[in-house]
Image (cartoon, rainbow, N blue to C red; front, side):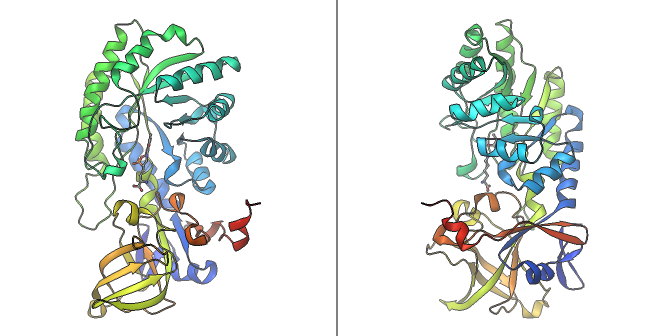
Length: 417
Ligand code: LLP
């Protein structure tokens, strides 16, 4: 059963009616199902089981401490991209040996923090970063494990903002640059250049671009061996898709994994593997609950103005992303009117959460839920127009707890002088 479903006509997250949370917490809030996050991790683990990968949850998708603690308890590792994410992971009690540190722009201070903490791997993206990391590790008298992030020159089938493997992408290095670093390995006495990393994009339509990238990676690994070096670990990144629309043809995680597994089992069975899923683990475990403030008619269509918009959930404005919008009480089909736009309060025409939706009669004070908002929802929320960010709630069975309170007006100015 999905985390969000109707029970006795009321929308629930697992065992809790959303309307109860609306009453006790107040909108806007994000709500996450702990059971669904656990279930997603188990399903992903079993889909990739033949490769026995270390699963490093990509914190950027949802970095609430309660989510990190939950995944830590389930045995996940973590993928971080900043000192702030490292701080969050450590605060959640994560063992640094379970952390991979990625990111295209790590500062010296961030590298120092990572080396000092003792993270397992640094996914490095340029020669300059390799040199900087070597200095930082040397200064601390440590040796750091390095994965070279390759730019395989593969255009993944996804939104252009989240494709990262193309020839002109800012991410990673060309294989030739990587080989040059391997050739110079003795210049970096404080590093172990032992792994290869790719991440070619997010919400990948299927595994085809990943398989194309693997051709490049496997060639690279053979070339490394000609320098009498060896690669121990291959980090495949994240990007595993979820269906945002009811009818969206997205491969199941098992079908996505199968061709990758068979390719790697036949050619690279001596390697250890890491994967960095973000969206797959948390997206469908979360929803954003907003309240209707106004209902108006524009050009013959109904427009409902909510108490949160692109400030709370940026994905529709930034990627034209689709999120299902559902009422808290199941409505008889006779009551549903099509062509409703759901918009936010922000002074931008891009602040439209959904267009052309079929929804029941709505009045100020009613609430709606935007589904599949557990990934890249709260983490991309902002205070634009000086709106406090939504609260966050975690459901465990038939109880719930607030895992992030509503921001206050005082929070808005707290860091200002
Ligand atoms: N590893 C690396 C190096 C990444 O850059 C990312 C995501 C991931 C793993 C996790 O990817 P996932 O499994 O979640 O697809 N804000 C966008 C998605 C941006 C993804 C950025 N990198 C969205 O809302 O769709």
